[in-house]
Image (cartoon, rainbow, N blue to C red; front, side):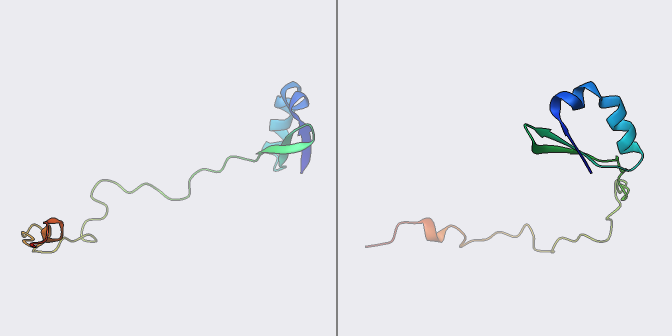
Length: 80
């Protein structure tokens, strides 16, 4: 892993990217304090499911839209 200050990184970006492409990690620092890391790009390993890809895996209860009569009873003022 190579530590490079921002000014040097701007000056040698093409060279640093070649190093990253060959598998080396490069850390960019501001005044010696690491702030970013250049690593080789890795494509997503998981494919995005097509529409309908979860068909049969999701279900909704038969009474999903049944009224809930006493749901808001707790909000009613109490009788005194």
